[in-house]
Length: 208
Image 1 (tube, one colour):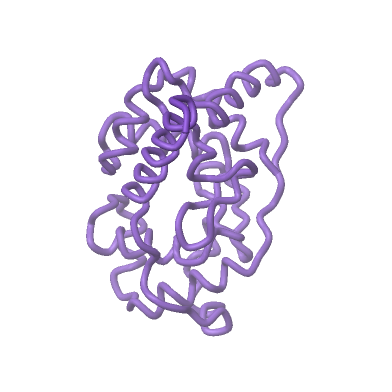
Image 2 (cartoon, rainbow, N blue to C red; image 1 turned 120 degrees about the vertical axis):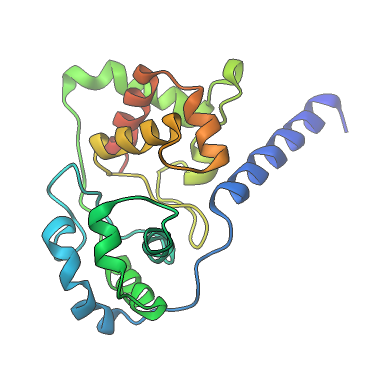
């Protein structure tokens, strides 16, 4: 085995370890989509009846990987994630409620997004970051965890394709500033400039 091959294996191992650290184990057990339909009624005003929000401030959660929405709801309930509106909504939710809502929204297909022709140059810059990372700043490729098409990896890494650019920018900016706490994502986002965050968020929005 030559040195080049060894380095590739070591790099893959580091990226895989990074992803496992960021997202950890899948949340809880299984949910019931039918039961989740009525429980998700409180979510529709912001996220839409099928999880396809039409307001950039609120993320699309349709077709998200199983377990991810439940994990985020649990984080709001424990205070791990801070949001006054979400904290109030999850206060009375049980673990099973979260799983059922998760299953309900996971069954829908996420809506597609597009970008303007004037944004292609920025999107190409974002593509470079998403697919190759920034080795000079020790930033790994986003697709190592989120997949080449941004669909995530079931039970592990969330879907980012088609998500609102504005929401992705807000999330990465919160990681960068430390408002949203995750040690590895805080480190990665801290190494990105505001422009690089805008570029990679735009590219993720355009992923189908």
